[in-house]
Amino acid sequence: MRILVAEPLAAEGLELLRAHHQVDELIGVPRPELIAAIPEYDALLVRSQVQVDAELIAAGSRLVVIGRAGVGVDNVDLDAATRAGITVVNAPTGNTIAAAEHTLALLYALARRIAAADAALRRGEWKRSQFTGVELRGKTLGIIGLGKIGQAVADRARAMEMAVIGHDPYVSAEQASLRRVEIVDFDTLLARSDVVTVHVPLSRATRGLIGAAQIAKMKTGAFLLNVARGGIVDEAAVAEALSTGRLGGAGIDVFDHEPPTGSPLLGAPNTVLTPHLGASTAEAQVRVAVEAAAQVIDVLDGRPARYAVNAPLLTPETAQAIAPYLPLAETLGRFFAQFCRTGVRTLTLEVAGELAAFDVTPLGAAVLRGLLETATTERVNLVNAGYLARSRGITLVERKTPDAGAFSSLVTLSGEADGRTTTVAATIGAGEARLVRLDDYWIDMAPSPVMLVTRHQDRPGTMGRIGLMLGEADVNISAMHLARSAPRADALMILALDDEVPDHVADAIRAHPAVLDLWVIRLGGER
Image 1 (cartoon, rainbow, N blue to C red):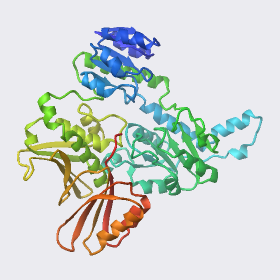
Image 2: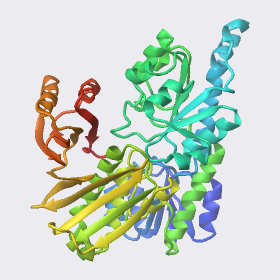
Image 3: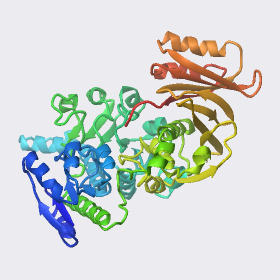
Image 4: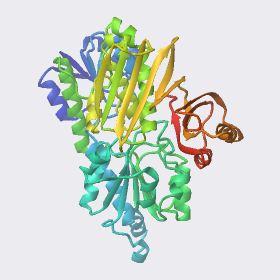
């Protein structure tokens, strides 16, 4: 078969491709020339510059696979590729070591004030006392996000004799203990860490994850590292904390806008700033080239690709039956992840009623996409959902039963963690998604982008007081449902809201004497 390489690729990747198929390089050509050439090829391999949009995909009438030599696939129109029956593959593991080592390089540079000392020496100064550093041995490293890169950082930090703690709601304590990482909650990590490093994807949930409020919870003089994505840390808040001495230093490789012209970090003291170099090693470039090339070969030879990032098309009959339930299943996964609050090793997805007559494997993939969306940079779909879940110690058990009780079809997701079983169920009624069960409470509520759930003692005035507190904060309630086990016993209240709930309002509601627990569930928006 014929493979077109449209951007520079490491020689090792090209050699692997040429050992199996015919390879042509067409690099740096005008777009019309690329569009004119693509109909003759079965595979296309790019990096990050060539825009593989719907127009280019439509021209590639023979394309079977598109390979992206790197992690992100922002330059590939996945929907267009899927509609055309083209598999898209990437190379998500090739830069793991490079990113982990760059994280530690920034940490060492901060601890020993390397950049400032180098600059002073070049100015002709010899002021050793100004550059007294700190030793990292015995310090505590807090890792937010224990995916591939976070785990690699943990391994290396332990070799440096650092204590390692981590926060990742999708990794169980047992899974983390295998790497000798102590799992703690987010606030505990901030309070205990001498160094905080973030290794999570940028999403609605993680944008601004580290801001002024979070920095205030950190140790005075702590270091902050970001080799993940720009936007996860609030650059203005970090710059202010560095100026006041609240933070002892910051190592930043990624920025809100790149190049970071005008970023307040450029003028902040005690920083080591690099221009998005996390994956920029010769070895990483070889690995991503070989990883992407190997998968292109697998697809061309009829084998499944390990890191395919788009799902195959469903048969028309199955697609028609399960299509309405795919977004519902993703919502279930997203709701479950926030309602459960902690990592679950075994999840059970039960599909009941008429829907059980079809292949519901895509529903499991949709559940895992919702569950893992803030924990992985990889797109979760029918092809890779199982692998990504297993890599995080999660097993999804699928069950089907013809009995859905009063419903025509019912989708239920449940799992146990820390001795507590969490259950969320939903259905489609009159063409609309409905949440119908939370734990042991049966409800009837349409999912909303923002939802507030309280478990409280069923006392007169409690619901009114909660509503008043939201109203005083200009948070509008669009719908509500109350479920209870018995009069004046524990009750579950679910509110659909038009607005975000400020943290201080949630804290105030949580502090109400009748409120036993509170969840702010965010379901709206894409990644």
